[in-house]
Length: 322
Image 1 (spheres, rainbow, N blue to C red):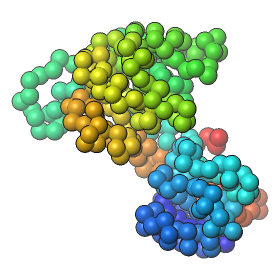
Image 2: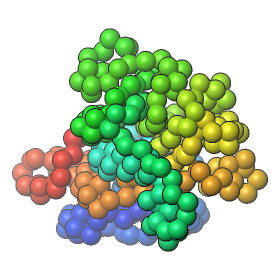
Image 3: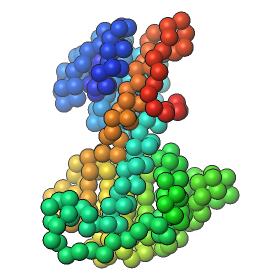
């Protein structure tokens, strides 16, 4: 059986798969739609990067395909209904980057509270000193109780942060709030009370532009924001307005879409907007967990079930299989 890799797993996981399957590594096909449609017709499974969409047209070219796998979270560019109709399993390492994303959000909050540190690291040691703030004693609003929030909350609580949270899908009486030492509030209350806001909402198309002018009108002056959610969650004009008039002092977004703050966008060249290229999940540990999870799940679909006659290697790190 053949596994086509457009996104590379760590070498040890690739070697483990190669002992069992024909593994063809062709990451260049991520930029070659015609070439991908040709090669996928011979594949029993494929590992795709975030930017490659799984469409009905692509599946039409893959008569042997039994599994589509991704190392990252998110299915908005995957036609799940078409996969179900063709009995193609959709696999993704949903929890592999939870801790790395939580640490990224924590680092972002610390950095934005002490923006003078960033200036010094950029070589601007003699910039006007900004008076920093401490996380201890501050109020951080947790917007969205995605799995990352469950790891971030104890980190912040241990630093003496008061946590408030909002998730439209979780009732204020749910026990999870108490377990996370978090007070549930309405969204307007969260923005009115928080010194900082951390956004980890699992994105769906219905949430496009959810953080708009009506929402941001409630911002407490001088807030800082960090987010690992899709930038499509933010309405650009509303965010630009909040960053310009001081409601949001600084904002760090991980993995913004290409045109989100490009030339012509109201967010272009704003000095207090910081964008990073999906660095939250970009750690060796997260990639290791994701690589082994995908390798094992592909083997479960294509070959023997995990835990049957052939022993499985230990997965390094803590990975809860969703």
